[in-house]
Image (cartoon, rainbow, N blue to C red):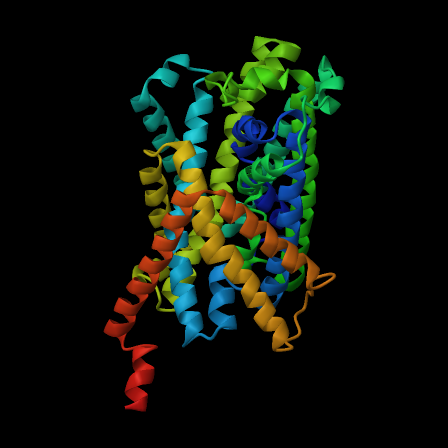
Length: 452
């Protein structure tokens, strides 16, 4: 595989994956949990957890700078032929589906936002599905390139994504009222209601920050990965934090936040066009159309970056013999995992037929349980063994504990149904592994035969 990603490309890949359509359609969801200026707490909390978790990623990636990200860390820390094999299989099992569905939410959001330009689509489910599927296919076609081309395109899309956030935020300040940014709704209670709202807002904002470790999933294609990956992760999180706060403050200043919610406190149908609404209020309808096009490009950028990183996980697992073998294939001339890319794209297309809101909490719960929490455990095991890594987390173990607490808080806040489905996914993965291991005569069955 070609090492064609430098630090600039690494930051661009992460940023264009992080800044998709997510923050532009989830602002009303965050406001529904934390009214008015309190919503800023949700974005800051998400950034703190993301940064602490990013340090976990950075240390593990500097020690195991290969493809697959969390898959490779669980495999190598817990043992390639024992518990690590099980953990890696379960992670690749759920990530192949959940990553595809996460990307599908971006396609659905793209279709919803496109309705601003073509209003009949908002009332026609068939048209919405067609738009979502079309952008999914286009994303796969564009990502079907060697990594050197991909990194250049990611840089361009990253610039567009940043520009979109800056323009929308600036529009909010144009004729905005800064008093709205600090005017708390009355009465304000910081009791259990706030705690519950912060938890719900946290898993939404963590979804929006998701993608800060995309470069870690393509470690074999990164130049000097021991240095580039940690720097790329930390830099991208800090950049996106500033952009998200600028965006949220701009929205709060530009329009009354109450206009995005109905009387029951739920987001209105028009709130999904919050970026266009803010720009139209400041500069008129023609400017809103231009920004809507930029929003759609930004959504595409996130899909593009997510496909690149997501496809490397089943590729790495298949190459190790713990996933479907044809996913280990590399393109003969482009040297990228073409079958894994297409397979991930198929899952994305299927996910385009689901409802956006119904899958977000489920995906968050599944990813947290089998990915984020398991990965933090892997870092603790690595430290207990006394292994030295090229990059070492600052103030260890505080960031790891903060990340663990944040992910656990977000997991519990997803609700009973998503938690139950996450546990079911975990159990199904374990059963599938045991069936595969029995057929392959690998651990734990190989160990039993050896004792016999």
